[in-house]
Image (cartoon, rainbow, N blue to C red; front, side):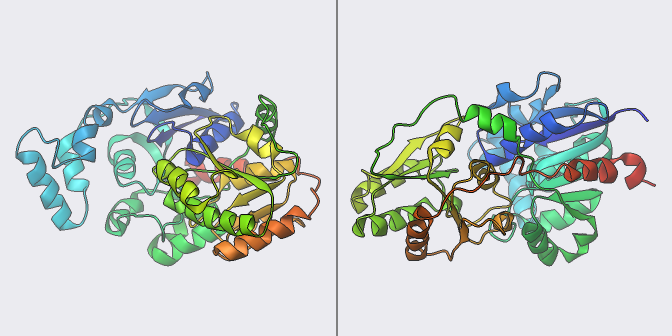
Length: 383
């Protein structure tokens, strides 16, 4: 049997968990079995240069060129037909009709693939493009989100997803939520945990140092500074810790639409001396390595790759009960606590008294790669 050609389609290569998980998967796929490709809706992002050199990168120019019309159809229209088709599509409850109007029949990628993957699902535009404009024997979606808490068009999902032979979901609990909302698709779903390249994470963690106050407990959170990652709850917990006289420095590492707001809120709460928002760090791992405690207070996750990465350093871990938090079950210095600032603060105090544990050599299961080989092989799916 020849190599399986597999195309992973993704929005862009910004610094985020989905993009990082794709990079780890690309590095892990055995080249004697797979010939991986990447397709981008927009040729942008801090992680573009990290795509392995042997992986061809395709750009969906038709989407990139028409992005203003796709992202702001009523403000960036060329003529009346655009807004009219958009309003018709909205009235039908799905934007599929509008995508067909804007993008037409153009195929930016002429190659044929054994497998095409919509890697950032559910994503209305990306899912539609993979199912309607990519030539592949087998088509799959890859879901990284808790679908009950992120905005998705359920009507479009029900319209498009029957065209996918497989729907990979990154955690057991996220799969259970998806299957409950879309029971008619449950026979297609399989769990595939995000891949974490342990050696690479540990190597990058030594690239630079973090200045530390010797009397302060070092706390780290890595993620978008956005509602779903709950930086507001983290700051309220920080306020309670400070009021108790607990000395700490909490680094919430990442960019996001709440970054400026959170920096101002930290000042208003009086925690800007101990609650730090350093912004985007393409390599956040030195912050993890320097931390005494890792905290993930998220409202919503699919798997939470940063939690898996933090486990590689053996420090105590505190998180809320989001899908994917089950990965820390059985870790003696890990706590899953209710989504409440007081509970979070109390757990951090307890964590400060806990020892580090021997970190796992790996946090990924190589059986997942074997699962991909078994389930995605066209001869298996189409038999």
